[in-house]
Image (cartoon, rainbow over all chains, first blue to last red; front, side):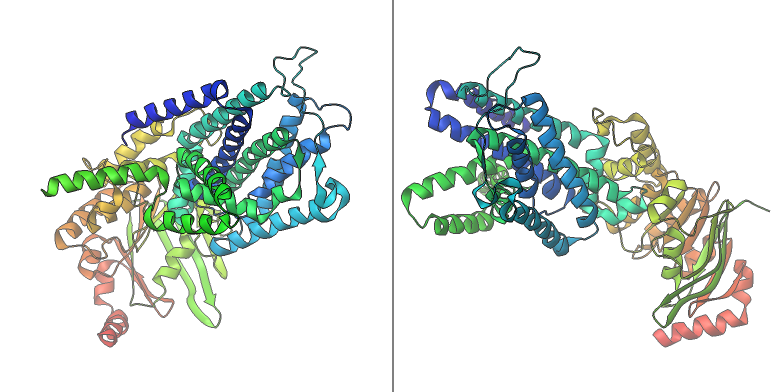
Length: 322
Length: 252
């Protein structure tokens, strides 16, 4: 796909997403919102896996911490203020990522995968086995955050339609922010670290600080996703921090194509879509899921986003051979 | 006497019981190309790794422009003007030649917080990168993907990246390794040009090339400096002939 077709395709998808609530039912609108939130989550992980070369297997921790933050900040009989709760939750996730990053970024390769998982499991058990967040039952979010600024509310998240467009706006904002980051000097350094960290050091880059900044930013953006997820579904459980969740988001990144923001979005669409289809077909849907993922990795190296170009190359290749 | 940029005194490195470098003294001066010779295992790589900060010395002091920099890490040494190239080509193979050098140049003014800047349009870094590419003899190849170039061109890119960081001291680890004779000759011309304004340490196996460009030669054997002097002195030193040529014979 050349860049123009790809831009047209992206705009068409965006138009579809914007127009969706007018045609789809509330149930499907909620599912689209869920996909968009998971797309934010996947993009945040792609910053680490695809662009910096850091395979984190504990990314759900930051998603979950922000989700719990908004739940804990919401009083029992009142809504929390959106403009306080959102930054506070994102900050909590970012702070957790910063502190954990200080430790895990001292390791490399397989050890990095193991310690990110270990820290995420620790966070999981904090919420699962202590009374902090209601134990294994989690917490209900009785009220969605209130968007009022000095008494005036520009929108109301209790309205499904308003919430839907709030999620769309958040996804576009995160996508735009990451696009900016990746073309900035900082982003170029991350890609350099992925390619050859040793050489980046010898060129004078303090690579640890760059990796820590990337880890913190990725954690904070996962927090945006966790916040929205909690608000959309109205409850939080320790499962939000579980290693299944970390695995799912890693699968989205791999399925869509690493090192490509559009790929992370495509991966979120594909994973949720496949789950829906398979669960409606059979109880043993995870078996089908596993087979599909194995097939995808075998036959679509580079993920979904690399596939159109590969097919085109094959067709063109066939023509020139004649 | 010319200006001493980098000086190591009593530099020692142990790996367990092995003395890889023992009390090595070496001085790099501006305008002087200093070659480091020695058979395999003599400790040349350990020496260059300690000078560049890739490896901390067990003992000894390293000074840059008179200041003690022994405790500085590799990236800190790069920031103050000590650049190095690697024996095994160590580039960003999937980036273009220009991006390899632009990234090297960006390290001088990294500006990590300016998120609104398009890195590919940072005029200063791009200019410096282009200048380095020209200086290393790679003009016209800016848009080639580094990994697809010939081995010799990749070696030139190694040097170009160091130049893009505006290094005053160049630590070059076997820049001629695996080059054809024509490419070698080009590189020798390049080294001669570069040394006018910089201090260069050249670790090299190729004797002909070393004697063609070096102003000073230090010969290492078994982790120690055997002899250091002008090419004439080294050529005529009976110690060097006995030790170095003897070792060479063993290897063959």
